[in-house]
Image (cartoon, rainbow, N blue to C red; front, side, top):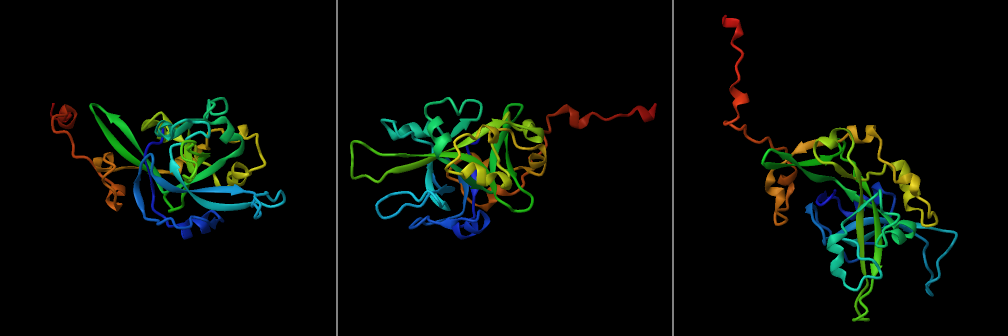
Length: 258
């Protein structure tokens, strides 16, 4: 799964990296080292621009940065609170789930991230890891988005939300957790974002082992467990102290004395 990630780059940097127009408007960006569900974050979409009357231009598309809230709220939902349960969508079932299938066909996005957190069970404890690139490039999660309107308040602004697709973990990542975000390589971005392409089944395949093997799996402090903590120290490598009660630490081979 993907329940926490880091997004520290400003919109200008992301616009250059994703070849997109910055349409985050009045959004006040700040580096977020502990992105949690229901937070607002920058995503990348590609749409047909509309004229003053709202008609789309069928001959042109624009790739842009948009601010959305994490946790997809389907357009037909009665209450927006359902979004807290829809932060992830499984690639195995996303095409058939009522909450996601419309967005899969028509409303796909990229979710830029510095990396994501996952917790590995080590005995009775859970050790958090930060999965990130080694060259500073953003990871692009495959995402879906939707627009929800409150029928009880017609004057309220529409709520735009997103979810992150997940798939079976591969390679070294499977040692940490059995699921991982669906990472899209740069060469797949255009196809994934293409608003005129409805059949994307071939893009729901697992990322290459080469892409996964290039990641750094960095143990970090358990401070990330609390969403109240948010700073660059969360990304620092943390080596837990050895368990002095572990007999394996004192298993000395003294056969040479015989």
